[in-house]
Length: 129
Image (tube, helix red, strand yellow):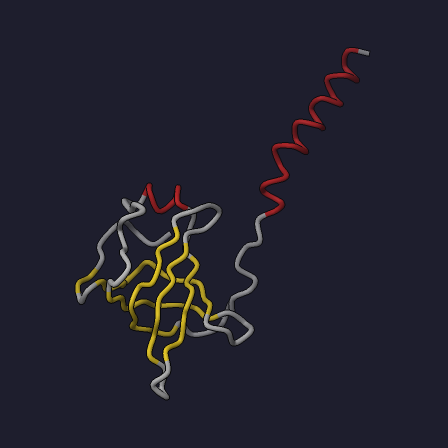
């Protein structure tokens, strides 16, 4: 009976601990084969929260209208380990970023930390992960 109880506890522990892993959505919303595009705009918000950090920024479109973009980044923990903080980017900063657009044609994408410019200068914080 003792080994059965241990087995049941083990299965329950695995199910509880494994649930967050199964809940992660991955990057399936973004074009795997799409070329990254380069955008330049103004930071409107830098959202430092789990499960992903978001950079919200405004870009002037080809027709002159402002397009509100959202760039998804790594988790705060990953970014913190690479030297980022919640104050790395501020509202009003001018950014040039490389972003992999989503599949649906909306102004949302997976943002690369490599080659990011902030106020015209390279942001050199940690390696791309």
